[in-house]
Length: 267
Image 1 (cartoon, rainbow, N blue to C red):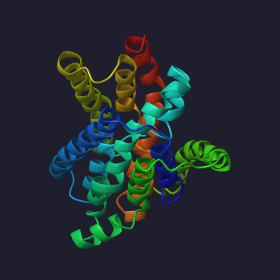
Image 2: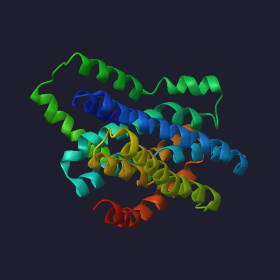
Image 3: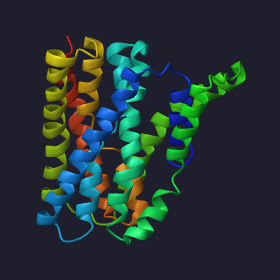
Image 4: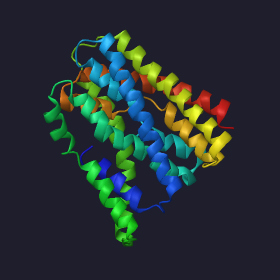
């Protein structure tokens, strides 16, 4: 989170030709993440009386788009979709490191403390720096390109390790039905429905994106719960055992859900 993710964001932004249409894609997902996260933050107030509400808000608003989504996208659509995937993932990443982090931190910290912790996260600064470098068309050498490729593999491995380490830390495996049901509702019902609605609006009125981009948008909406939920929950002491179990269960569910969804909608 503090080293590999900022580098992935930085490298992805400087490597792409940014246009208004492409920059609009992470904005769409950031708005979706924020809207769903805030909605479940207030829903959680009626369901939970502790910091479970905070990790619910974070988990509902994001997904395992990078660690899980990138390898799945490449397997289904090929390497050509990596650029589109990364732009979409940027929206999730910015949410996780801004509003998502803030909502999680609020469970154990004051607003001031949450904001201080938020501005210590390096991903925000990596994104801003990359946009500036991209704007001025600064070029990096071949040695940098070879070095940067290693981070993609490390990125995927890191995500799976986060889930495993989170499960290993669970001392009392207590199944919280309300929490799991709420996160599954957000991830596998609310997310694809809202994303499908946005795609329909684009098809009917705007025609900004092509068919392949729409498929990538749908894929990003159905990935399992974010592995970063475990890391943030652990860092901020916001029920990491619940986050780890929910992430694990959603990952197992996605192993069946995504192939079925792909057959029905990605042909």
